[in-house]
Length: 366
Image (tube, rainbow, N blue to C red):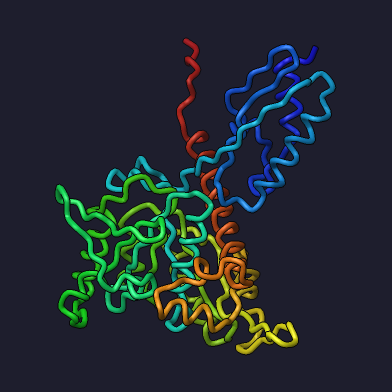
């Protein structure tokens, strides 16, 4: 009769395609019970948004099916998002597992639209997601979510995020709406506002906090990079050479600050003709992939150019919610899964470093 060790040995042949490690050594097999040929355990995936979740599940069922002594097999599937940053070094935001800054070298590339739809896409997988609109001068997230009358309260000296479509939202736009005046602040004040939004907000328990940064390499991106440990930066660009050239500067800045670059997304990548179903590259082709190859960073995905994405942002009805089966929504979901996968890879490397730096438990010889 087969034993637990043989079952685990068989399961250790299943490799997570992203992490390149077997699921047993990764601790993804929980509560295993084996009684007289009846096998039961929980498969705990590293994120509900992993692009290979279905593949891993299929591989597990396949290897268990190869064990002849297993009569009945009961597998539960859960997901626990890994911590992609050092929470011990951030007591102010210790309940947020991953902080992802979304940056661009220049304005007009649709960074806020990408940030919002990626946040919503991650949320639909079951992950707990927050969205921080860090563009103090031009906050747009409330409008894009249809929250013109939205507000945030302060309870016990903590800012309470607004809730929208399952995500927690903080934006200076909620305050700006009260007086309808432009934000006219110098850099130090702007940096102080961002720090308050980060550490003085009741983010509760989040798997991912998406931070929609203003364009460029100014005070706010620098403040985010230098104030708290973050998982990394996602760079948004368009195929245009002028946009990709400026995006390179953003990559260079964060590299100098030793902030991980999670990857690059190409927005307005192409236009799909509704009549001929062909791709037309209106703004050029391959800008983001060139950046990916130049800096050896992951290519997260490409988002097509479509009027429904724009109209959804203007009317407060994001396309991923109003038309979830569209090509555009699928592009956002695919990019969100790749983003989550890269966060898991960063988290796994972080855990390896923590283990490597830990003092040895062995007793030194006298």
